[in-house]
Amino acid sequence: MSGGSIPRLVIAAPSSGAGKTTVATGLMAAFAEAGLVVSPHKVGPDYIDPGYHSLATGRPGRNLDAYLCGPDRIAPLFLHGAAGADLALVEGVMGLFDGASGMGELSSTAQVAKLLRAPVVLVVDASSQSRSVAALVHGFASWDPEVRLAGVILNKVGSDRHEELLREAMDSSGVPVLGALRRDGRAGTPSRHLGLVPVAERRAEAVESVGELAARVRAGCDLQALLALAHTVPELPDAPWDPTAEVAPAGGAASPEKPLIAVAGGAAFTFSYAEHAELLAAAGAEVAPFDPLRDEQLPPGTQGLVIGGGFPEMYAPDLSANAPLRAEVAALAASGAPVSAECAGLLYLSRSLDGKPMCGVLPAESRMTERLTLGYREAVALRDNALAAAGTRVRGHEFHRTVLEPGAGADPAWGLTHPERRLEGFVSGGVHASYLHVHWAAEPSLAGRLVASAAQAAPAGSAVR
Image 1 (cartoon, rainbow, N blue to C red):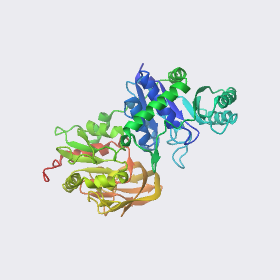
Image 2: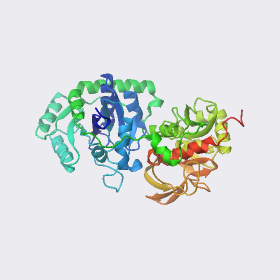
Image 3: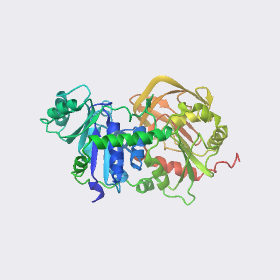
Image 4: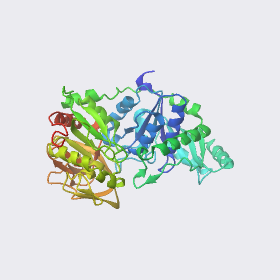
């Protein structure tokens, strides 16, 4: 079997809340437990669901976002992530046809399914309907002839009689029922202000939840029929995305010095796209993870730092209590070494978060609010910096309930151009800090530039230890 013909399914739903994550994660775990190598994927910019997917399959959960990365990169990124897999499962986002606001099908599950030439299995919340389920499915099956809606999994079914009525209604729809799952809260995953609680914050409980999801799916779904459906896909003509080929044209060829770039992780910093570390390594860096909640020092020899998104507001007292590490981060930033910070990283570099001292790298204070800031953004780099050359245009995503005052420094990280025009973030020395989450696969020069800057930097600790 060639890479382009990897068996694959897209797990979608009519709307959010129908149970896509429950079913997709359960299917991933069930097939993995059956001995298949399962490649997990998620439509959209979400970081949290891929953590559960990774736990279920033992492989990195990867995002497929046509807004952030462009439609032409979806199939190559998919083939890169799914290399060597027996089966690839793609969890959708929102409703099947919901995409970027005001941009038609862009970034929708339907668009990704078409780009991957993959059959769609629709997860339907059947809790408040019986015969109407057939009309609902008929509408979704006929809306876009290019989307192959090939099966339905009925979720939140109340009883044997309820399932019987639903199946009778579906008999005339022409779309087969491939599973029926009963209402059951035992395998739930807890939520809070930005969605599910990440795996890194509840690993033992998450392992148990994923196991229960797998058991429910095995009991309620026709796994053989689903696997057979996944094998009915055509070959994709695209070549797999190659991080080495991507960074080479941007001047990110491997450096003999192999600068060490530390990447924040642990429970407070869980938001990261797998391709970022791959691009850094391909550009010649040694990538070293560290946990700001536990590690009092940066990895020895650190010459660059990446601090992604997450939930520092949940851990502000503990992050603040780790004064030795905060001092090292501040010293590294003061030395001019490249520091790339997104969202949670931006807050960590501020003077304080909810009154708790942070690293003090940026002349700003941060705090939690009740207001959700959410949406896709377009932006341009206003001046040369350690991450982006002046004029570099990116698409990103903003997702937080915090506010930073001021929201931009004398040299902003980005000038936002759509859907609103404003200055955002901070550039200071080698520091590039912003609320904007950017997928580097869409602009690999960011990784190459960061590594090149790190190769010129003095290692961390040379001035503080």
